[in-house]
Image (cartoon, rainbow, N blue to C red; front, side, top):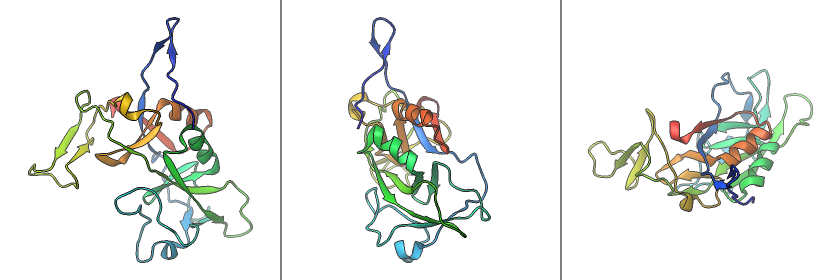
Length: 218
C-alpha cells in the first residue's frame, strides 16, 4: 500500500490538504448491459441480486465463481468499472490500480467470463467491494442534513444517518482518515469516498466508467 505523502506547495513546501471525492460508477453512458450473470441461483439461492453479508461489507462464501456471459447482442460490454447489484464489476487493470494505492481498503472476488461463441481472451474481471468504513466526517465544517433517531421522519437504522440528496459539502478529518485512500462513511455506508491520490491514479491509468464528484460541491 502506498503511503499518504502530502503534496508540497510552492518553495516553502507548505502541506496541502488532500481533496476528497464521491466515487461511483459513471451512469451517464446508458444502454442495456451486455454482461449477464449466469449462475445467480448458485451464488445466492432465492435472491434476485448479489448482496453484501448482513452487518458488514465484503463477500459471502460463494460456492463458485460468478460466471458472466459477455454478449454484445444483449448490450454494451463492461468498462473498467461497472455497478453490479451491491458491488462493482472491475477489470484486472482497475484491480491493479486500486491495490497499488490502497490494498487493505477493498476486497475482490474473481469472476469467470465466457462468450456466446468462441473463447474469451480479454482481461480478467472481478467483483469489488470497498470494505473500509470510517467515521471521519467533520460535521461542524460540513453542510448536510443529519437525520437522528427520535425525529418524527427518521426512517433509517442506527443512531443517525447522513442525507446528501439536494446538495452537500463534506469535509473530512485528516486524523480520522489517516493513510486510507478510499472508504465508506459510517453514517452513510452506500456512499464511497476517495482522495485525490486514488482519483489521480485512476485518471493516469485511463480507467473508464468511474465518476468523481468533489465532496465539497455535491
